[in-house]
Amino acid sequence: KNEVEQSPQNLTAQEGEFITINCSYSVGISALHWLQQHPGGGIVSLFMLSSGKKKHGRLIATINIQEKHSSLHITASHPRDSAVYICAARSSPNDMRFGAGTRLTVKP
Amino acid sequence: NAGVTQTPKFQVLKTGQSMTLQCAQDMNHEYMSWYRQDPGMGLRLIHYSVGAGITDQGEVPNGYNVSRSTTEDFPLRLLSAAPSQTSVYFCASSTTLNTEAFFGQGTRLTVV
Image 1 (tube, each protein chain N blue to C red):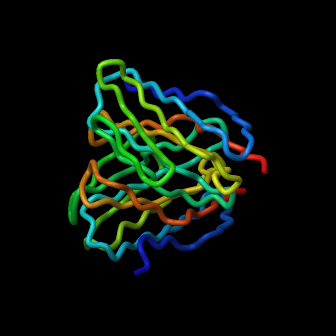
Image 2 (image 1 turned 60 degrees about the vertical axis):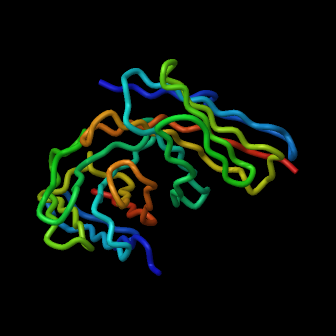
Image 3 (image 1 turned 135 degrees about the vertical axis):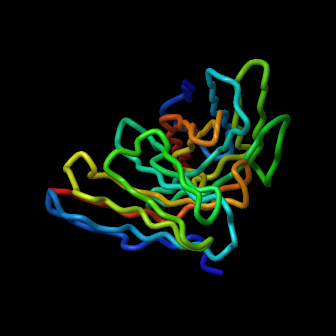
């Protein structure tokens, strides 16, 4: 059974700060997703990783398969980055487990 | 390009009533899935489909049925609603199992 843990649960930052959100999972996976849930409730996929590192604008996601760990980094954070960030790990077609989410607040 | 469309956005049901949550995508995605999101529980996979005519259960399938008669549509049926099914439901689709997922806007369901 795959368990997914995120840290921290809540994070408050000042605009411009570098943000790191961590995700650990317990079993071998085929893919790890990072999602962003807006205050209005909509969910957007940020990254899908199976190895290495991906970058999109100010967002960077990394995964270490051996350590069963992934990180999401936000450089030069902005108030519009305020959202809940969720990681999800798939270990089989019928087993997609989600972390509880990290609530990020970026203050101007 | 509409992406993933879920209807309705809000619904209130009485215990024992049945209803269907609709999900449609226009991206020709093979993989579609339904999730529920509850406070303190996060998102959980209900059912998924890897293509037309193929469906399977996820982590919390009890009380829900699905079918996939076309590539575009993946409805979720509540056969006899219970208060424990009060939740926010999300439909998602992706090209294959392990590619970027696109989510619908969600359906907030309350069962009284």
